[in-house]
Amino acid sequence: MAWTLYAAYFFGGAFLGNSVPHWVNGFSGRPFPSPFAKPPGKGLSSPLTNVFWGLFNLLLGYLLIFRVGDFDIRQLAQAGTVGLGILSIGAFNAVVFGRVNLK
Image 1: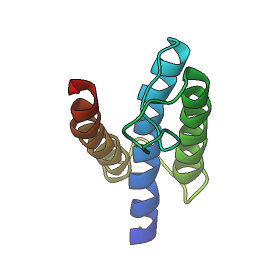
Image 2: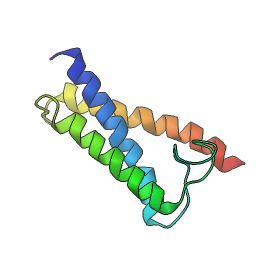
Image 3: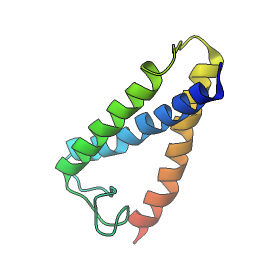
Image 4: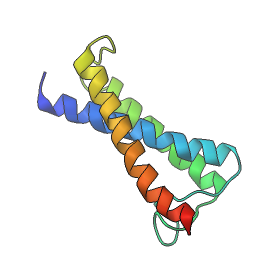
């Protein structure tokens, strides 16, 4: 499999993982940091903004995983690459949003 497919699956997993906190906070009616906040990533965006941002991330993740190449969840390398993307964005978000929430 070409390295470009692994890159697409990794970033697809990252976008899928990033959609979760935005959707959950948006659906719960809570403001949450997003790239559209002031300052970006540090201020809080409205719940509606987060619902749309979560949807955009979900769509991009879907396109990168299921429309690029021939993704097979039973292939460990492919599923693992998506999982690494999810884990990476989860760890990144934990550090970044942890700092925001401590202030």
